[in-house]
Amino acid sequence: MREINVSLITQTVKELVIKANKILPDDLVSCISCSKESENNDTARSILGDLEANIDAAKELDIPVCQDTGMAVIFAEIGQDVHIVGGSFEEAVNKGVSLGYVDGLLRKSVVRDPFYDRVNTEDNTPAIIHTKIVDGDKIKITAAPKGFGSENMSALRMFTPSAKREDIIGFIVDAVKKAGSNPCPPVVIGVGIGGDFEYSAILAKKALCRSVSKRNDIDFYREMEAELLERINALDIGPQGFGGKTTALAVNIETYPTHIAGLPVAVNVGCHVTRHAQREI
Image (tube, rainbow, N blue to C red; front, side):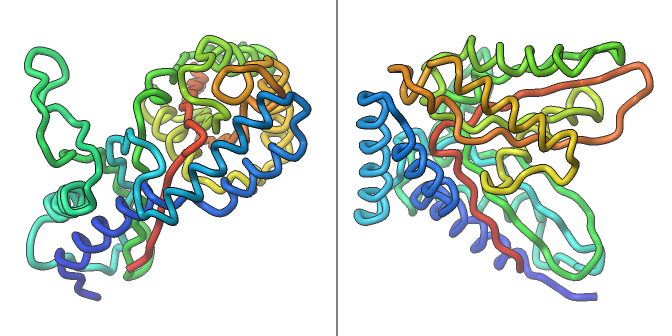
């Protein structure tokens, strides 16, 4: 049994939320750059160049890549041979988020009640925390700050098992079409298929944390990702909604077994700064 003090969890979360908000994953940056080179719409190409310049400036000036520094989403894979000592895991995570957003001078966007009393908590807590118990004696933490310009464009539908491949593809493409310019395209589309109502949405969020250069391991879904990307980019929404063939940078599908009577499908939209940072402790 390995002991991990909550202070290490707090420090790790603090550093990850700051890093994720300031430095995009290399593969995402490369994808934007490649899209600029292949884009044949002059306006779209110019906008993609501006996005590149913004990413470079954020890194050089050590500032957030977007003014909406998101709601902190934390995925934690906790080894079953870990004993967390010194306090509560959830409190440690939220303390790390608080320190990261306050000390890192990141915008605080969380309100303490969703409807009747929307008062800012002033430190971006509480975070959304998803935990999973896994083998081993380590903890892998992924911080994925999520802005709500894109989050608000997400969708979920409970299909029946009679649904065809085209029905699901049509639903996903239509979700992106309805979103239009709102999620600050070019977007990354996370798709969750299976599980139940809530787990399909978690799958879709997890899909956004997958590298945009990594395709699904199963041929059926890998081909579906490719077709979705092609059809979404044919919508001519383009970068920031000004037209062009770069509406999406990637489509990532994650799946899970489901009930014989159901076929849940969730779409989680990520903007061109689909952020995540990960560390194992």
